[in-house]
Length: 242
Image (cartoon, one colour):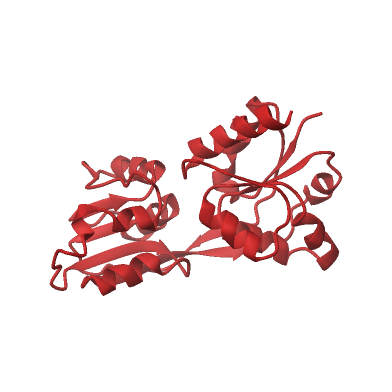
């Protein structure tokens, strides 16, 4: 009996993981809990630019039609690929791990160096973590946050009832926000049931945040924080639990 995976990624990003999971023998129900809405964003003067996601690049280009000049840092290989397709070559840096903590470990942002108020722009979604912004400001950088998209919650997907009735349900968590949006769409009894199901998390931070919200089901965490890391985790889960 196969596992039934609830893929909560936004619809325009769900297919690669859905196809990979099905090739491994999973049943997959796509249940996007958010959609990405681009929003107007300014173009500040900065010598260093950090693009935090594919959505950041996509929504920037939808408005400005060209990428800024200067050092360009990509968080994640797919972000780097999209930047390169739009003409950024070479990418100044692609952190080894695809999260804010890895950016802060880069030599460029060494706290022992004096940035003397150098400007760095962080192109991102509305809200989200403040770690990168706050740490760089403490190190003397003039940080400009450029929010060019927002995450909008969707109504509960049509596939929820089928997932609720699955014999071996498994939840995919690529971000905290996707799970928060799913929980918000559910009545309390369904929310309680959901939190008892096993879950695959993209990062330790996501797992910890969901446990703090009361998640009780078994969790497994990807070793690498990107789609390939999640696919590897799907393989490991199946080998361990089938």
